[in-house]
Structure formats: structure tokens, C-alpha cells
Image (cartoon, rainbow, N blue to C red):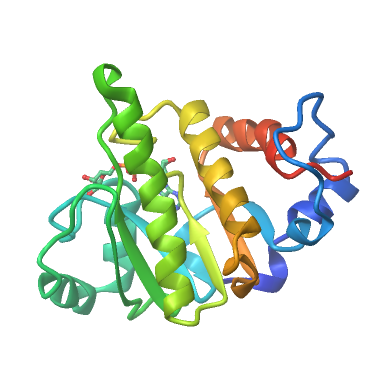
Length: 210
Ligand code: AR6
């Protein structure tokens, strides 16, 4: 099964059909052009036919469990061989490879922080850096779409609501920036119903419809 870009609704469409509802609290002004450039999609990131998907990797960049395991299993051995040439990455850093057997063109491997209550500000900066460095890599490589899983919120234990605020705020600021218009679509990919609900509740705060 392959999910094409045309099958993925924009948040503008989700507002139109009532899935997203206006929030009482707006953190940014309404900007209608962003509603066509951002999507929320529930499903398996490995089947998405887009320019780039992001992998929630670890510092070895050599595979693991969760979405990392799913991506490596679906992409095949050649991905592992290319990853061996990358020499790992630091937390908050991102590196790009081909996507091999996946329908997407590239994989951007980012290393999220392991959550800990003791140093929340630093974890937040590192998680922000995952999103920022991934978006910048997509722009540098002239890629037009990027699909993000909810980095760090599985095995690495980052609370989903906190991580979603970080992701939405960083992506909103990226959209506002000079290079923001270089990407046609930024897709938040959620796996569970609970994560979907969190995104549906918080998206209207960062991307209000009016
Ligand atoms: N498609 C989309 N999202 C998925 C998929 C999928 N196929 N599978 C899982 N998720 P996690 P982390 C969601 O644990 O917390 C690995 O061992 C999942 O429900 O994959 O950053 C790495 O090697 C969750 O919402 O990543 C690292 O050691 C989100 O993806 C460590 O886990 C991220 O969960 C990274 O942990």
C-alpha cells in the first residue's frame, strides 16, 4: 500500500470538514496560506510517497525499535549500509539518506532527546533542533515535502502534549521564516488515536483558521 500526497488532507481541509475546530486561545495570527501547507495524517510513515520522511533514530543511526525499526525493515539492507557511512549523530542533529525500497525519496534521520524531568529546558531545545535541522535539510536538498513522526514520544518517553507544543511552535516559526515557502507540505504523522487527538486539539492554537 502506498499513500500519495493527494490522499493526505491539509489542515485547511480538516477545518472545512469540521475535524479541526477553532481554538479559544491563539498563539499566532491566522495566515491562510499555511493551512494549505500543513497536514495531519494518521498511519504508517513507511508507506508515504513524499519527498522525505523523518526517522526518529538514535545516535548510532544504525536502526532500533519503534518507527526506526519499521523504516529500516521496510527500506532494506542498503539503508543500513548507507547509515554505516554517516558516523552517527548527536542529539538534536539530523542526517539524510536515500529511502531505497520505500516509496519516499529520502529519509531524514533525526536524534530526539531521551526525556527526563530533571533537565526539561535542554530536552525542549534538543527536540526543537530535531525539527529545525530536519526542515533545513529538506530545503537544502530541494525537497518539497517532509513527513514527521512524533519524535521522542515513544521509547524516549517525551510527554506527547509537551512534544506536540514544541513541534507545532517550531513548524509555525519555520513557516513564517524566509525559507518557509520553499516547502509545499509539512505533514505531522501520528500513529495512535490519542496522539491524533492531541494534535487535533493543539493545531488550531498554532494554525488558526480565521
Ligand atoms: N509510522 C508512524 N509513526 C510510528 C510508526 C510508524 N510506522 N511506528 C511508531 N510510530 P519511537 P522515539 C510512532 O519509539 O520515542 C528506537 O529504538 C510512535 O507511536 O519510534 O524517538 C530508536 O532507535 C511514536 O508516536 O521513537 C531510538 O533508540 C513515535 O512514532 C528510540 O527508539 C516515536 O516513537 C527513539 O525513540
